[in-house]
Image (cartoon, rainbow, N blue to C red; front, side, top):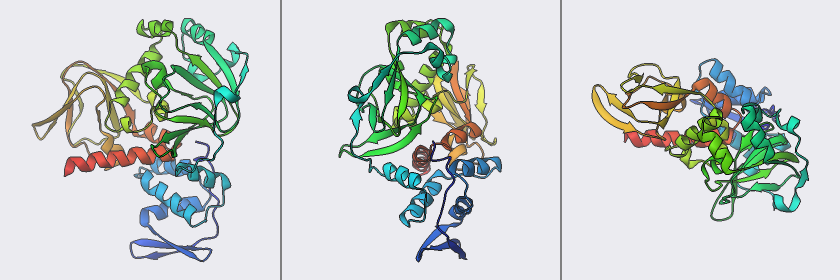
Length: 373
């Protein structure tokens, strides 16, 4: 996240129009880029951050391609035209070249006395009712960790929830050959690990401190499940439902669970009645939906297409692919619960996670292309 907010510093670069493309030249090297990439380049060259570019495009109603933006940054780095050492390091990690010397937190962490007043300042704890908050605080420890400490490991089955008090951590997808790819970063104030904590799922990624960090670690207890099931912790119950839906979806199931935490509490929950029309064919689409519970059927020009159950997502093409009109009508087959995420909210989050945004957009395009073959 902090990288996406950094102004870019580039070497002096000359450019000229070449047909439908642009030719960049700097330090004796040349690079040809598309017209859309040139729009991104102009803003980077003026010292704008990645986040500001994305938000500017959204504000003006322009379609953002995270894939093209990411590819442009990658090309600029390959040409050695980016002067920011922290940006160079970040994208090197994104390609799987994580520095050696990673150690697990059991060997390195310094345990601190839990401070209820400190914990209550964190957004997550503030949203809990007092009764639930007390249970969580009683089962929380605080640990101080140096950079390169691995907080959790792919495949671990521990049911812990983590809240960032200070510092930044990176979420790394692991590959069978031992490589790790940086997928996103988690800043101060955020929580992660909900898949393991709420659903008992094995960790889907390595989470590693990118700088000295202080982390609150919440141990799961059966009492917490009882509180959630009883409805005394509505926000956690909502997170539980939404996370279940995301992990069952075609797109989000392909990215590490830990990268989804920032999306889990985005958007709004909709209760829709059986027979209710959710989106109508031909309408302008500015949001997408996840079926949290229930079933949604689709028709196109009066013909039945398919139905989606829990975990199904629809409307994402309007956000990430076409920016156009709805191609089908969606109607609830029975009483259902949906999560609606508007374009503005969605892009606000992804503007802070370029690598994750590129991954999700790629999956959305694959899904779209498989439909139209």
